[in-house]
Image 1 (spheres, rainbow, N blue to C red):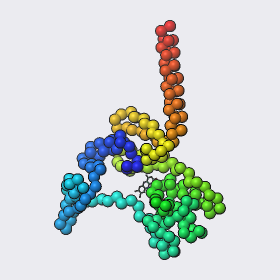
Image 2: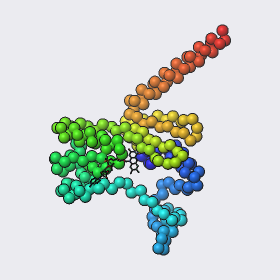
Image 3: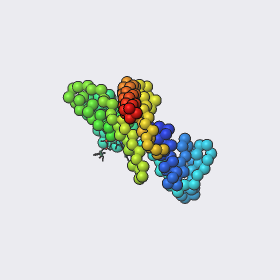
Length: 209
Ligand SMILES: Cc1cc2nc3c(=O)[nH]c(=O)nc-3n(C[C@H](O)[C@H](O)[C@H](O)COP(=O)(O)OP(=O)(O)OC[C@H]3O[C@@H](n4cnc5c(N)ncnc54)[C@H](O)[C@@H]3O)c2cc1C
């Protein structure tokens, strides 16, 4: 979620979950679990202890690389590929969650699609840079709509955030776009507001005549 929600979005989600009776601990790392025969609780690194019956660990994806390893391909966390999605065998390509680009394994649908396009082009002897994928990440939770579209990870150089506070305290819209696009959107918004003001003044003027 840290790659999908900013502070206000996180606060809304936290409030929602607490409203369901959950207690949410953030910035908390589990130091140890304890119990005899079965789990009784966990202790965080700061010493705080909570009781627990179940521990769910979100450990990320684990690509199924056995078949690639058996075929003699170079394998790390995933099947190692270069920037054209070519594996260590020049006639074999990999893309999506199974592929490992230097330093990273993808875990999003749109990224997988973009990698497939790069691989397909490379198979036909063309080198194309991967398109910046339009990612959509959706948290499937009953009763709350949490969606994150487009570029994520606010703060990245060359991106700007446009915040629309939404209708009420439980609504939050955040758009992160390349800086140039943000400047165009801000300019367009200012122009629309100006036109709206001019229209309002005109109507007021007409009314008083
Ligand atoms: C719970 C969950 C929620 C997600 N939510 C989002 C989201 O909101 N937005 C988003 O963008 N992404 C989301 N993702 C990630 C997204 O689903 C993956 O990035 C995407 O499916 C990757 O596509 P892929 O084709 O690379 O791999 P997969 O979709 O995993 O397809 C790989 C296929 O290969 C098959 N396979 C594996 N090994 C073998 C073998 N040896 N022989 C034959 N077949 C084999 C598997 O059975 C599978 O069908 C989510 C993933 C999960 C698990």
